[in-house]
Length: 264
Image (tube, rainbow, N blue to C red; front, side):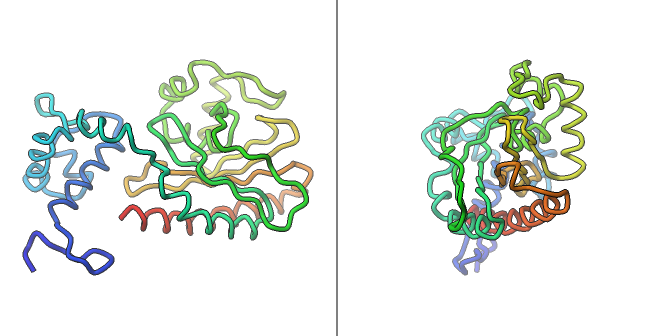
């Protein structure tokens, strides 16, 4: 086998140069700032000279733009990507797994996929088969990031200035429990980072609680979130809450393995 080929997970010969180019594009997409060749190489685990070769081709094809020594994603990649739905095909391939987890936890679950830097799209919603009261269909709905558990996970992936941008420099108070000042929100988001999950206790809608756990991509940035949504009356004690969060984390790990395997 030639040096430019390797075996994929399916056992089919894969072109190493193409794989490296894809890794570079993913690393650049995950970075909020332009990067030079050395920084890109460090992100993808390649020597500078090895990272430079696919960058030249990507620049020639318009998939990468270069300003002096700094690289960003290019105009032609953006043109192609604008017509692509990131949830296309993914929802149907993970829906069964989300349904299994919903049955195990006994409540409605949602899987939201990150879109761009400051947005999340709900792509799967599943309720357990045996449940008296289910949540209404939430596909296509948008919630203020500071008042939603999934939104808080996205904010935890940003610095304080970006949090202000993502929330349009305004924190609407939706219920008496909604966090409505930036000092309080920054403190709360720091807690989210430390504990590794987020909650919304009647902050979005009175009587409703939600827990959300992150799913990270290979670059370490938020890729998606798995959320548990229920009437507060059905969550009795702190021990029950802790049990649900741990089960949600385990479910997110299963989904992460599934999503990452589909991306490879």
